Image 1 (cartoon, rainbow, N blue to C red):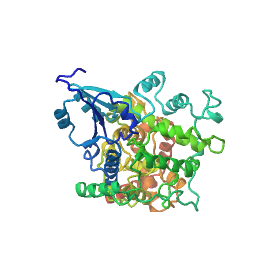
Image 2: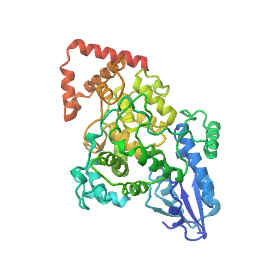
Image 3: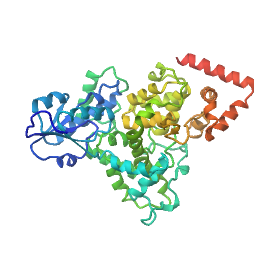
Length: 491
């Protein structure tokens, strides 16, 4: 767009805190005299009372990035800088987050602005438009097949057929941890000077934010992030699939990669991951784990971007669980629900700003659904507490997956709702039956009853409605009493 003010002979390259890509990406944008700005934007610091560890990650990684790449200017005030320097042009990689794009579009009315496809994802917007035009229905499994073929991953002899005859080996990836398992990697607390600086900064300026600050284990540079990735591939990847859904009060991270915190701020990109995966010899023995991991990177993560770009507004405003109207109880923040596995996950999030996908979905998310917390409160909690949380991931995962949201009229993002009773938790963990499982089962069946008209029309839940209706009056009364007593104590 043509500028409304006189151009100078200066270009600005704008970098956001989640765009700490290999500096070569920014060097190739340099044309004439250029200033490179790393913007400490409020969106990443004050939009919510973010977990302290998320702020530490941003501050430490940004300071390291500036100190180790020439001529980057760290600033908090973009408008002031633009007014003082009157640039010819602003250049940036697509920041993806809608709120940031709205700001950029306003700036583009004043300054010539060029937005480039981001390495944050494998797919460009044009790639996703092309896929959407080919898809007969909006489904992850369909999207994932396109991705496998597009990026030539796990295909049989360079054909468009899957290696070993299956697109997904998910049914093999549902084992609980054996009793004698130990953590495959013991992550050390990061004590470099940048992390120490960031911790002091956060304790001074964000002392009332949520979370414990002393367990910062994450990389803050591209070099250390690549080592983190290689460490995962060497020590964890071959067991990732088998135990990716497992939970245990003795295991913090298991075989999960913990790549999302660094991937979601650009220290590594999905391109880096795929490059290394393609070097691995795939066999019948390792294919299930590697496929499960690949599905997360080129499938689910990219699908989040796809959904966010095309359907975010509809997802946020068209809810399936319309009777969920409670506020988030304070005992979630206090980690005191008296449901043992929930409190264990909450404590893990408190200490590390992280838990794996099943602990999020079938643990905390399922619980918040069953107690009737309203959608926007669930979204806000996840966005506040997780180190890897940004809207491009939170809106599809919370509104779309957890809350079985709509992407268009009567069309859901997912093929089924994700709900569970205590049976799933016991099956996938080392937690034993106790009072907690009676409470969860009562909440579950009362939830089934609340939405039974809708659930009767869904194949995967119709049987649960029948199970509820086949219970005798005494059992139904007892479940209602357990639910009411528990919710009274929780709130």
